[in-house]
Amino acid sequence: MPTDETGPGPILRDGLVWRATRPWTTNVHALLEHVEQGGFDAAPRSAGYDENFERVTFIEGESGDLDNLQMRSVTVLTSAARLLRIYHDCSASFQPLAEGIWQLKPQPPFEVICHGDFAPYNVVIHAGKAIGIIDFEAAHPGPRTWDIAYAVYRWAPLSRHIAAERIVTIEEQISRARDFLDTYGLPADQRAALPDLVIARLKGLVAFMEAEAAQGSEKYRRDIEQGHHRLYRDDVGYIRVHRDQIAAGLMAT
Image (cartoon, rainbow, N blue to C red; front, side):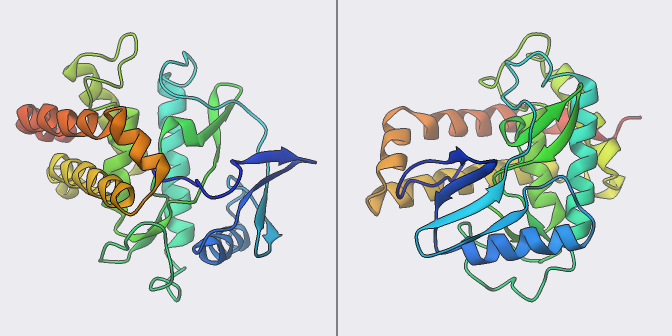
């Protein structure tokens, strides 16, 4: 997903994560301050920013992708879904800045501020459960299901490429996706549309990568050279093939 590429990458110094200031930094820090004031303590806290660098607090714990045995446990999956729900609820009142500068294009209707990249590598775990969400650089206004669709894609995962032991079959992926949605509390009448939302989300990601590369982004040029866009397009095909099975499975009890 979109990340910094101007200046040095994130640096940990004296308990703070430093990274280059970007056009959306003001909104991201205002968001972090808003959810902190709302009682959400599972996100980094803003430690200020200037024209060169932004600083946020570091959350102690472990992170990684589904190749991490702990990260693919059901407990981590469901605790991550619970964290996302609490974060969404806290961000729902952050509407005055919905038209500000964000890295990703806002997606109406503006129900919450989507995290934008709610994947295992952006969740911190401790003692076998998810305790923090990091990297809000891709945050942007949108509907809950826009964020949930990408989260389910990453956490189920609804992919033949994001493979890990015991979750390579579509049946197991659907079961994990359903556990995520059940814990989040997504109503049944919003679940059938999720496969199509995942497809739209991935197509949007590919378009973003290609546009950034065309405008001179070295990072996205490298990503495309390495075939990342082809992976996402292949997963779009995978989800289309299993669309009806996924939609039905997400409704099962």
